[in-house]
Structure formats: C-alpha cells, structure tokens
Amino acid sequence: MFDYTFQWKQVLARLPKMLDGAMVTMEVAVLSMLIGIVLAIVLTVMRRSGSRPLAAFATTWVEVARNTPALFQIYMAHFGIASFGIHFSPFTSLLIGITFNNAGYLAENFRGALKAIPETQTRAGRSLGMTSSQSFRFIILPQMLRIAFLPMTNQMVWAILMTSLGVTVGMNTDLYGVTQDLNALTFRTFELFAIAGVIFYIITKVITLGARLAAARLFRY
Amino acid sequence: MKKFALTAVLLATTGLAGAAQADKLDDIIASGKLRCAVVLDFPPMGMRDNNNEPIGFDVDYCNDLAAALGVEAEIVETPFPERIPALMSGRVDVGVASTSDTLERAKTVGFTVPYFAFDMAVTANSESGIDSFEAMKGHTVGAVAGTYEAIALEEYVNAWGEGSTFRPYQTQADVFLALSQGQLDATVSTSTVAQATVKSDNFNGIEVVGKAPFDIDYVALFTRRDEYGFLNYLNLFVNQQVRTGRYEELYEKWIGGELPDLTVQGVYR
Picture (cartoon, rainbow over the protein chains, first blue to last red):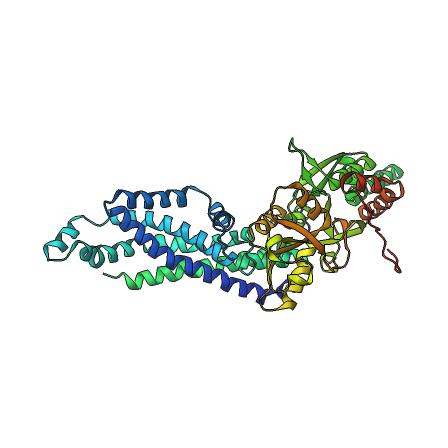
C-alpha cells in the first residue's frame, strides 16, 4: 500500500534550516531545565517548610504539572494567561509551559531522592553546630541532586521532546516548527519528519550518554 | 491439447496482467467506497453541524464525486498538515481539502484543474489600528500553518523585516482566538472564512478591513501523482460540476455572492 518515492535531495537542501531549529529546541530545553531545577528546589523546600499554605501551593503545582497533559500546560501558558491581558510570545509561552512541567516532575524526583537520605544526617549536621538551613544546603542538597541526577537527565530528554508541542502556540523556529513549515511548503512529509526524527534521536542520545559519562566521573566515591 | 495449454496460459497471463494493472479508479469502483480527505476546521468548506456530522462545500463535493462514481462516500477528517500522509499511507483516495496547487507541492502529489478559488481578506483586531494590508507592516500577524495564505504572508513579513512578526497557529479557531485576545494584530484568511467568523460572534473585537494583494488562490483536488486514470476522471468531474451548474448551486448554498471564475485568462488548462 505504501509506495512512495523518497526525494532526499530536495529535502536535504533545507537541512541547515532544520539544524537552526534544533538549536532553538536545545535553547528552550536547556533554559527550561535550569529554571525548572531552581523552581523544583524551591517547591521541595516549600513542601518541607512546615507552613501549610506554602506546602499546599507546592503540592498543587506538582499535582497539576504531573496529572495534566503537557500540551494543556503549554496551551494555557499562551491562550489561558492571555485572557487576562498578559501576552507572551510563542517562545516564552513554550518555555513557561515546559518549565512548569519540569519543575513539577523534578520536585517529585527530589522528594524521592530525599527519602533515600537518612534523617540522621541532618541531626549529625545540627550536632556539629550547623543551623537547619546550613545542614540542608551543605549536606542534604548535594546528595539529593546526586541521587536525582539520572532522573533529571530523563526530564531533560522529555523537555527536548516536549518542545515539539510549541507548534500549538504558534512556535515556528524550533525543530518541529521548522519541519512543519517546510512540510507545508513542499509536501515532502515523510522525508522531512524522518530527518527531524533522526535529529531528535541524536540530540537525546548525546544527552543521555553525556550525562552517564558525567555521572561516572562526578560521582566517584 | 497444445491449443488448450496455450489458451490456459493466455487466460492466466491476461488474468494476472489485468489484476496487476487495476489502477486507483478500478480499485475505488471495485471497493464501492470513495475515501475523501476533508479539512473540517475550515468553514464553510468543511465543518461539523450540531450533530457533529461533517458538512460544507468540500463535503458535498466529495458526495457528488462518489455519486458520479456510483460508490459510497467516506469523509476522512484530516487537518491541513496531515493531508499528504493520509494520501500516501493509503488512508484516503482523493483530497477534497481546499488544497492550493503550488508547483512546489505538485512535485509530490498530482493536482487536478482548480475546483474552487479563494480571495484573501485581512481581519484585524479593532484596537490595532490596522485598516489595510499594508498597515500590517510592523505588527504581529498570523495565519493557519500550512495554508496558502500563511506561506504568502510569511514571505511578506520576511520582506518587511524588523518589527514585523509572523506566527502560524495550528487551527483557524486558534488564529481568531489569538486575534481577539490581541496576541495577533491581524490575520489573512480566505474571505469566506473571515466573513463567516466575524458574523458568528464567537470572537469579539475583530473586523474584516480589506483584501490581501495575493494572487487568486486556486485550489484543486489531489491524488497520487502517478494515477493518471483517476486524475483524468477527476478533471472531467470538475469540468462537469461547472457545466451542469452544480458548482454554482453549491457556491450559492455555502458561500453566496459572486461566483469565482475557475479559468485563467490567456493560457490553457
């Protein structure tokens, strides 16, 4: 049934444009991870703070981020917030949506990581004269980030793949957006998306392998 | 005996050859079903009624085509970007999907003669102060990704340079939502869509402010590029629709007003 003649030449001429798109995709993913990690740490601290409103806020964030589709979160960042008269560009909307999602998932990762660190370490820190926040920052936090390192890599990969949802909010500079633009122009759907798929695969593979190497070097005891 | 063997061989080979040569047109007639790719997010060409049933110009056109072929029509909803994958993967036989017949696309699929023609209107957010196509320069404008008007508008925006931004959205509804929210200052769409949307009262604060200076957007039916038999049939069908007055009838039913001419002055086809 599927007899289609692939025309690679026509499509490979557009490869530079797609690689530019891949750079934008990386930019969104990296930014969303950096901000997401900071926010996730804040959320984790809020949940441990013992303050009810803060804990409730953090729990709500995590619940919404983890239990609604990423597409919904990105769509809301663009069209939802705009109904209050605040307008974000597609890039910003996409970044907000993915960062929101990242922060929620990472906060859960961090919670799990914290469970793996014995409570006695905090007490040991306190008995050495550290304040509660010092013992968290210098003893618990570094270990937490170490334990959560590979799950964080996972989330980074997920962030890369989520950038493809940007087209719903008018994004046309990322890898997926560029691919779709070119598709409309040429109708060379299968070639274009095959190339996009390969680029996505290479990016995520490099990230996972890189992270594994980095982990092996960084976390030697 | 020899004669019998020869006849048997002849019969077998013609049988085989016959089977191998059955083209798309034969397949459709044999299967008793015509599957059309139709975009149902593009009123009044394709949309859904209150019972969620597909209706519109393109839907009627597909039904007419199926009736002419003596088969049953099946409407397969395909968003704009999915028209070609649907055709290539064999999920549909023909696209009745308001598809602009660009030369770039014709390298991939086979187009018929035009079966409809659009002109393009500018719709603006009332607060943007845009009152013509030229006034869009320096603003954020958008259109539905993958459409003729989006491709044309993006070229203009690139030529306008700094300050002008182009944003494609996935659906016509998203474009008008963004426009009424003020995320877009103006959009270019087919004038049929623009009129229908502004009239619908679904979106506030938008108005049709003028025409876009694009070439007339001729749209054609499409099928696989190598299906000459079927393309031939489709071309004749488009011709007959006009000849019998059915085209005018459908135009009056769904759009109304002055009937667009489907011929180009001064050249064949």
